Length: 215
Image (spheres, rainbow, N blue to C red):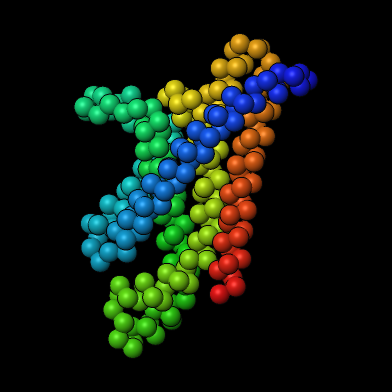
């Protein structure tokens, strides 16, 4: 094992890891916002609106994320939409993870005892007030772990954006392998950095879970 090489490339990998962190955080934020909208549509009284939400989830969960990235980045110019690779990566990953987050959020809401909603409605709460004041506070803790799993999956899946030339961790590893011909050392460095990022997410999830449990 060439430890000197690993030490020499580490600064470049740390810089690339920061790009991975940025694209992951922005994608998670976008995905969460879209997921909330999807859940709201799913809870609508209108069948057509509910079907639209289900269609979105089915399409984005039923097709590879890599294909979705290619459609957005390479197919965008055909529709007059030329995106920077970084922006295309955020949009692609965000829209993809939104489908999974929506199901996690919806599952947490449906796991709240229905009697809680019925009791709130019986004392005059409207549907929106019941959801905001009764259901969501109880569902919040239930969705922490699933959303954490989604976040971890996105961080690992962010390697896909290397296929559209985003200079993140995996792209940097491939570039150094082509010049050093030492894939074991190069991929070992990138693997350790991915583990650190995933562990950081797990710590945040554990802290949030403990905080909600203490309430």
